[in-house]
Amino acid sequence: MFQQVPQPMGSRTTVILMFDKRYYVPILKWKKGERIALENLFEEQKSAISPLLELVDDDDSSELFESIIPHLNHYPIYVDTKNSDNGNGEPLLDIIKAQSKVATKNAIYPVLYPDDFPEYADQFVGHTDKILVRIPVPEDLEGDDQGEIFKKISQWQTKNGLQIDILLDL
Image 1 (cartoon, rainbow, N blue to C red):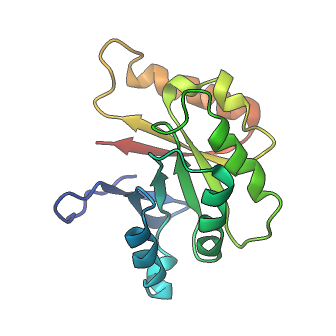
Image 2: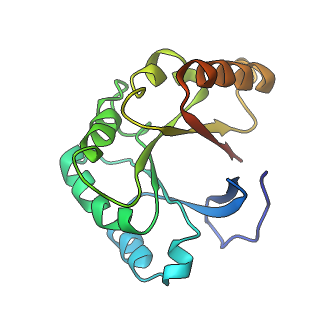
């Protein structure tokens, strides 16, 4: 269930309902000011968010992972490397694999797109228990319609057993 909420000028965010609890999903570029803002939230605010990091720089994935670790004590984080990974998906998979070596309260979850199913999505099986599928709306008119997209994702989920969160990106 999605709910439209008032948003600050220039902000790209959404609210999603997961397990009957509403979460605010700020879409961030993971710049220093954004990290500081998250650190200064009250605990009750931190417990109601799940940031989506939309990475655009060619940051070293190990340095990036180190900057994320302190935040995992407060909330899960979704990571989207679509605009930074030269098309092969390695930085995202490296980040997801690295988290298994660190004990934290929450986890980092990959952000995938409808075109990532099934081949690219299969790489994350065994490395995470949840993914977020980011569906741009309106979807490309020449691609699959919404029904086909959800059918493909549902079949993949049934086969692999991972939890799937959906974000309709308006």
